[in-house]
Length: 468
Ligand code: P5A
Ligand code: ZN
Image 1 (cartoon, helix red, strand yellow):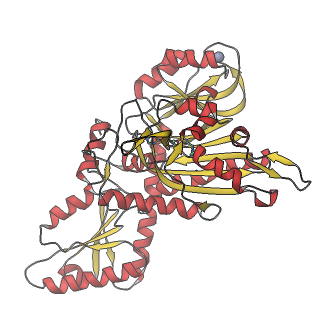
Image 2: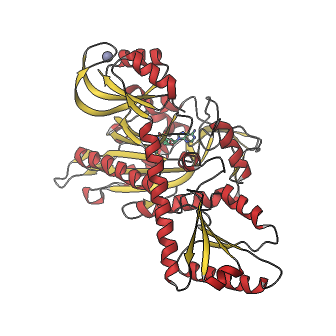
Image 3: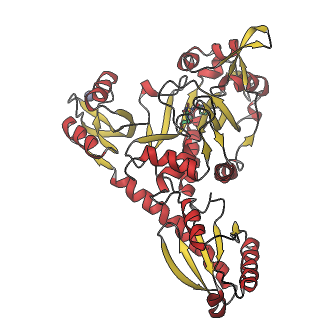
């Protein structure tokens, strides 16, 4: 992949995922293929969340005074908020914000809902669109002004310990989610100057795209009692006293889908993990004039059996050349293709093509055992794709002993470089300037060494990268 950006734009168009021609900057159209990938991705996430969270749906509009209540939060978002000022021709006496995220929509309601310690903890989530007037270069799915797939979770707890525990749980949840998609990640604590506005601290997931730049694909924030105090969210303890709650929130976006596309794709186009592929198996009948109907009927039977086994299967019986079909399904990233012709039926075989390895093999379809073989193959594809992605990710993480070494390593092949850093803000900002990178965050605390920039004792291992 010589130019990732170009590849990414082309594949979104060719595979009919997103149409970027919508005439508002940073806002795009999900096409049917893209929508299916999105749906399967969300289903995975919802399955995990539904075990411990409840889904809710809040309004899109937030009154100005609520948004403005939490000073640090509003300051962080002031340049990114879209405002509604009119209803028809009438100027509104209270402006309404399009949610950039939903803390200030939800928390006034939480204040009404939380009563006693018996109500806690709360764990809610919603999947909605949010709006951010991004001023940096917009890119489909990666930096958009309408985030169409914003999964935000918000939790409320009685104690600081429980809140802290929830941050860890949320990190586990996202690890499980990304693992199912085969997306590699690093988890680090963002520096104080880069945390979510209003949070005590932010844990962030970053992945590496094929051009070596990192993309923040998810964040988990410990909000402490900041919002609880602002919105007066209190509960009555067992002893009848009123205490402020502790909160967390965590979110992922369209960027997850961008990562699935970008990380697994290759020169032939998409390569989708079976978990999110619209079709996991496509069957291409190899038809000659004689015996066409027999082949088709045989294929229909195979489709029926695989569908019954819970797989997403499609019979491509269009009247076009098989080669054209192969090209198209490869480009669209279908994990497995089965080719069945008269010969195969005779020999009770099928030719199987694995999209990830671009390899063909022959399997027996003599008995229904082939159904389990297909399932095993799909599992192997998932595992192999994940391993390949992690190998590439790990190859892009290197350590440095000096600032010069960090700079060289970043310039040579981007990725992530780690080193000892004192943790002080002025030193960190100087480092960012010197190496032309961003500090992603702190990975291990209690590291004993010296800061590679200022020589002071170093308290932590830090990750830097060129970021999206
Ligand atoms: C957590 C959920 C929040 O908004 N409030 C509720 C918290 N955090 S965040 O870090 O600001 O955003 C969560 C994730 O959304 C992605 N993201 C974006 N994706 C596409 N386009 C954008 N303009 C955009 N902005 C943020 C990031 O992955 C981020 O981690
Ligand atoms: Zn330092």
